Length: 616
Ligand SMILES: [Zn+2]
Image (cartoon, rainbow, N blue to C red; front, side):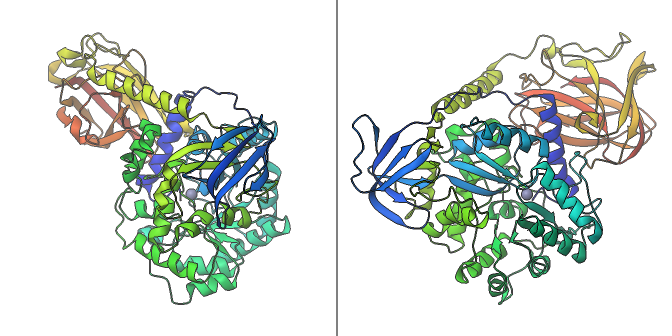
């Protein structure tokens, strides 16, 4: 959904910010190899139906045969599947892929991600690697690349400049440019943010229609993001092939499903993100599920527990669940999609929550499993996957128990294969475990030398230095594609009659909703190395300035890539502010990695001074 309101838009912005700071390289590439093997005696869900106690023979990355008591040469490895269920690898029909997304996805059994908006260059790089036979440890990627939206519309707020359009006359050239970039299908946004009590420019109906027609002219599907039931009808009427989301603004009209069915459209409800949008962090229950938890990174856990801010409208995931039930009754193809990594979701793990919510909506477990396998393969014309049948890709998931009875059994993964190559889940789990142990060690570690005194900086040396940590450096959103500028300098006349303070000034550019410019201090030996400051309880500082409202941002290792923030006002006279750690998303200070004083996101000039920054 990549969300509509400014508060949530910041989420993506900070992610971009962090990714630019640190390349996600904790998981070393390992050469997975395709193997020949037979899974014997498993319950096989073939994408449509269950075959009891069947054998599946894999060779050369494909399924060689499916049946009972298959006769394979004695040197072919046998995997005992008795008591287990073998399924086609899951297809997540709505994600946003970058960084480690595809690696994480495959760990949890998602062997194909249908991305609905990412950097076209990322998609090109991955697809080239896939074509070269690499990336067997990553979910197979199909991507919309850039999405179609109005100038200033949803999708333009993430700090990546994207080509927009506003008239039907521009539609074919816009679509052709996406086709040239390698987009596998066309993603269109129709969302005026009214469902969220807000407003945003959006494409008009004639431009929408022209985009859909232009996509079809090039043999591409047109998948449309909507926020309201009214828009859902409008885009289906205009010829959309599918909805990238359901609406949560109203109960479905009595004829909604028959209307969708009559237009042969498919629907990817994304119940998990709609639940988060409705105020419940959808992924929270996943973090305490022992079948999944050992494979969830600290970032995953942080994101799964995160909700959207409360919207002032009557959004409810129950409306979406009612609509799913109605659509299912009219045999509308329903596709499982998560919209990872939006708040409340994470790549891979969230498909298991989506399956659970589809069943809660009234689908049978088998129907839900089809929604994550054969249904998206059919809807997106991925004829080589989504089913277990001779000649198809050996993208497979083996789980303990019977998910056709208890849908949560999909979480009890024994093995995942992509093109017959088994994912090395054990090493991944060990890496995640090591990172968690390291994090626990930070919590046990003593505070950095000098920190126990409490003083970070009084600037009396005339330099932007600190008693421990890295000192202060400038930080602006230019790192995330923004145009804000900033300057820091030591000035005369500090708080309490002291000699010096630090002055922070600049210009916030309105191009990014999460724009910032200011100064950053890292308490560790270098930026973003977390240290234990839990011996102290709060951050205090003196500030004065032009009367504007400014922010303190605190990054913690356990909070992941998004800082917690609190505001303060910088008036004409020095004033002391004390902010308890606990007010920064409840941290106890045990793994703080950076503290920033910044202006923004309101555009314009700013100027404030800070002095006597301490931990108390
Ligand atoms: Zn999305």
